[in-house]
Image (cartoon, rainbow, N blue to C red; front, top):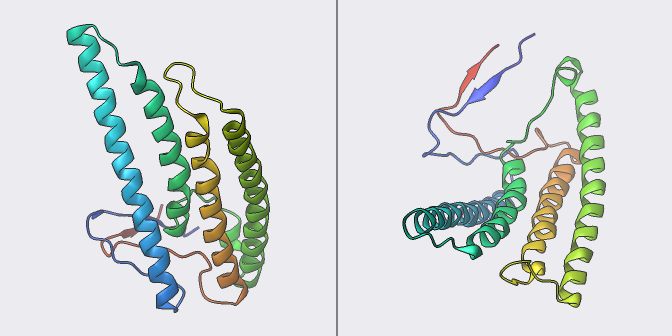
Length: 197
């Protein structure tokens, strides 16, 4: 049944290879993706430091820092929704390929085109609706419960991240439609090992 799982043993050194032969477009996508990953990493570090600070202040001085809960929630929303597009670009989302592995290459291509089209439509609708929510929150001046932070700031992370995902999926759809090998771009490590289950 020959399914393969790639395990990356060396996450530090990443060779950037993509299936589309147009290097300028790929390098822009890779740089955009790397920038998002860097911002997400900084946000995770900030979340860790803020929570540690809150725990220390609460434990040693009995002074909980109320702003930490809300601020870390805002940052977490950004990390989650901004991280979806770079994960897609690298082929990192979970796929169930039990059936598609048994199809021919043309049938797999059709299924890929259909799934990308459905995904783009669905995410387009969700992106629009979450953008409307953020604009309404801004217009109404909605704020968080404790520290009175404007809610639209955290809410706008959602449509921005989803719009990026739609962009990467649309580029993948175009690549697949034009018949280029492997419609989904991937960045793989040179030390990834293939294992057959």
